[in-house]
Length: 261
Image (cartoon, rainbow, N blue to C red; front, top):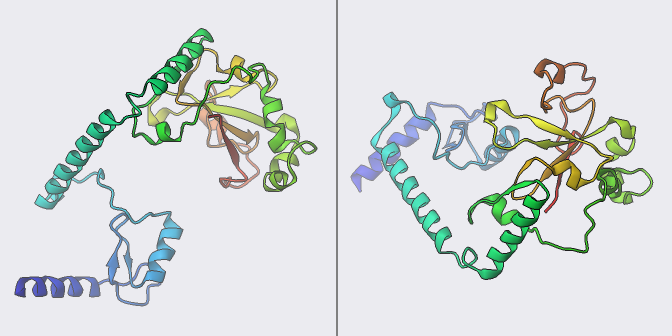
């Protein structure tokens, strides 16, 4: 008990030597496990999470230099690997993995994609994108519908829903010639992310031919003047960030990500 009391007092003295990094007025009482920022109250904790887009959850895979590596870090790594092993084992035993209906659906989707010259890859059960995938196979859905027709209910100034039109008014107010449809190229390193520019006058099937898809395609609908952070394959990086009269786009006004599950 005495040891715990001494430890608590040492922690209190340690935090007392730091000021809150949000308000810079009060002594720090908390330290964020994620970004290591000091806070004095729940209000400042919430403010720092909002300002830094921090979730407050410790990053178990963060890099730690050898000089700073302690027994606690070793124990954390050991427990993390145990958690990974348990998750992988649970995923392998999941009933959906061995479900005949699931296997039949995946086989049907892969077979159809292969026949259309599309390389469809699926992730193991437990991955977020695998859980989010709600793809079904329906012979009644036409595969010759153009991308322009698919987007009409969202960005067409006449045919789109009024509520959706208001939210995406930056698109409806812009000339349709300024609208670009991009799709991320899979199997590339993180420091070399590139996008394919799709042809809106052609069908989704024609645009996906010869491409790799992981689980389901995600199309990014952007304006020509706002795609500064998305480098199209074959485009010079410097050309992608010049001539932009707008500020950095927000998630809503800058680009519209369109999932096709």
